[in-house]
Image (cartoon, rainbow, N blue to C red; front, side):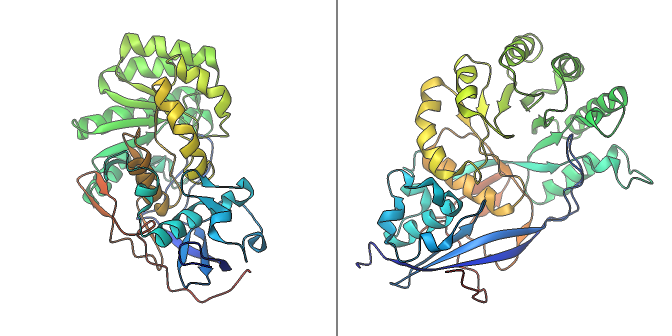
Length: 366
């Protein structure tokens, strides 16, 4: 087989520790997000000695790709050919870039800028911990300041404390207090809020009335998806904060159901995850989003490498104005080719995702 179409000879599976700068607390639905956990990765090896690797999402059978030429597994123009192999979407794109000596953003079309704005997605309910002596609301501003020292200039605040962790009235009051406190501390920051479906329409309108002067960039998943409620939210925002966008599509997205709502102007940003939705599906969807005037910002929370993938997607497909930043590191991964400063991430022009293959002890799954 030629070097331009190598055969996959092995799939090595590993788990790498991921480390956040601090323990990340609760959101409106879930308990503590911990200090990082592990990242599952796959390394694809070929008969030509070329290697691609990346995070995996979900389960799959490595034997279904071993012994097959790359051209049978991934199409440079569209992505993974069989969605049964979507769990290897990242690794296959990385290998494709290595084989063609192109960065992933070039494979995707280089339609966006290679320097991408990033927001800090790590401002959770740390004010509620520890349970026996909660540190209080001031920690949100402290965490923003800590992340600003890492280079962040924009912040997404988790809200919805009254959904599970506090009384409705006390939780809503705390949400308002933290939103206003962060705005006061960072008057020029791009500020986003994410309720993880922790409100209903009426409650969220009351929240917006109290923070209308905070110039929120977007409101994310304020309540369970409902076309009528999203239309009503858009009308309310047009009255109190017309520049604020509505972002949806992270949690169990029904994309076919969301697209008409977006086309009607009631969703401004779609958020499907860069891993679970995947590069291949994003490649197919983006032209339709451009047609209806909706922008994208693939969800990246959980693993720092996802931010790098989302930035490559933004640089490749365009139509992405800001991506989610996950502060932290992944053991054995050298990401220094990505330059992060002043709230912006510049992706490298190295082949694939521009990340050297980690030096791992081989435990073949082929």
